[in-house]
Amino acid sequence: MTITVDKPILDPCCGSRMFYFDKSDERVLFGDCRRENISLRDKSSKSGVRHLSINPDRMIDFTRLPFSNESFHLVVFDPPHLVRNGRSGWLAKKYGKLGENWRDDIASGFSECFRVLMPNGTLIFKWNEQDIKVSEILKLTDQKPIFGNRCGKTAKSHWLVFMKGAEA
View 1 (cartoon, rainbow, N blue to C red):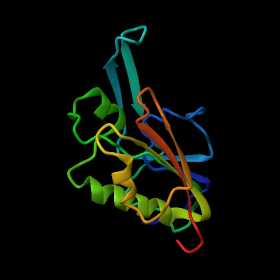
View 2: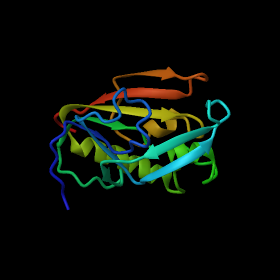
View 3: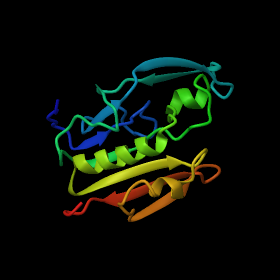
């Protein structure tokens, strides 16, 4: 089933929408494969507990997006990046976890994100090198980033910007 959209931005792995200034931004279609509310122990939190809400607009699988070709001006692709963290671990609950076939999943995710992106549209890709180097991830797409930035306390998080050409 193909879904028609009326929003210019897709985030197919929104999680808890951590990096959004407005977590209810009407321009974004927030998608994820899970919907859950979790309370996590957190010594750095004033109450000692942190609440995590994953509540997408649509339940979707980033490897098989239910949208027509060239539906979005901007796609934000921030897939799970962990393979070694246990299912009950705080990081796995917060970010999700990749399965054994993570290479196929990420390659399909890139392909799907570029498929639903309009020509000359922008793909913002976020990756953390906790378990897998970004150089390994970039081998999973034939698209080349324009520029990027490392950030975080250990400079393991990468933000990369791609632009879909008319021929892609």
